[in-house]
Image 1 (cartoon, rainbow, N blue to C red):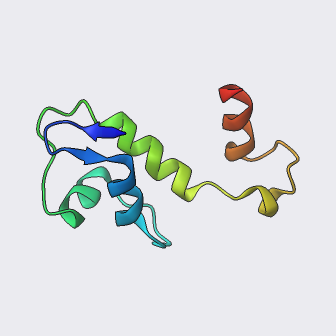
Image 2 (cartoon, one colour; image 1 turned 135 degrees about the vertical axis):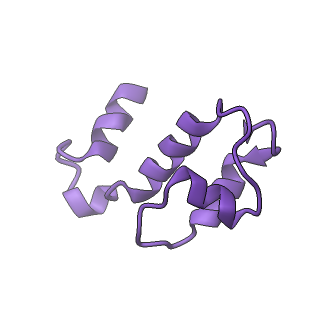
Length: 78
């Protein structure tokens, strides 16, 4: 899905850029890593959400107790 129409970036492009980064990069850092910059800014929320998903603990880390952000967001999406 295209998340940035100005730079024609997909969510896959953002996820590939994040790769296995252990840190939580800023949106500007994500854009720099892809060799571009934010223009209109409508994509910022979507990119922040992708970064948050990338940084969220995995289900096996919290045991599926519903206490982590990942479990809570899964519940809201259902």
